[in-house]
Image (tube, rainbow, N blue to C red; front, side):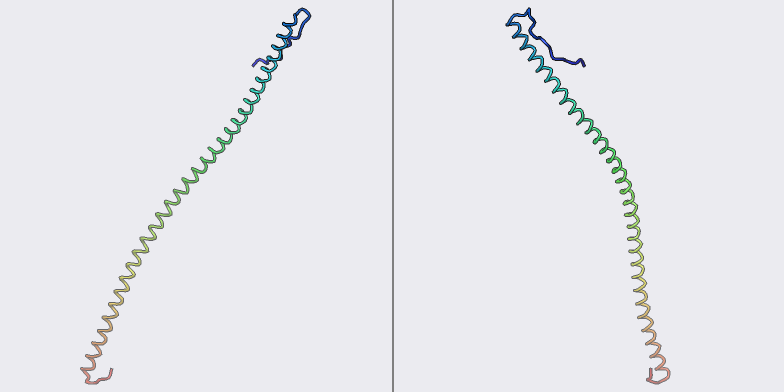
Length: 134
């Protein structure tokens, strides 16, 4: 971009008083315009620096998000495997406990049958020998 320099319209000896006054006003306007343009350029540069900073932060956040998304995916996969494993344990425990309860019930039934048979055998023995001793 071309650089705008302050305009020097200083009064030359050939200018009349009115022309000199208009020249001075024009020079003041020019100087103010140059200053305004420079201020705008500085403000634009500040905004540009902020844009670059924000783009850098955006890139970092996108990278962090990608890493976290991959990590979340791995954790979800791991959780799914562990939940399936826990469910298998639950099923095996339930089946084993049910089978164990059947074994206990059968043992209890067997014990009752055995006691009843023992009492019956004792009574038969007593009746066959004629004694009342146990």
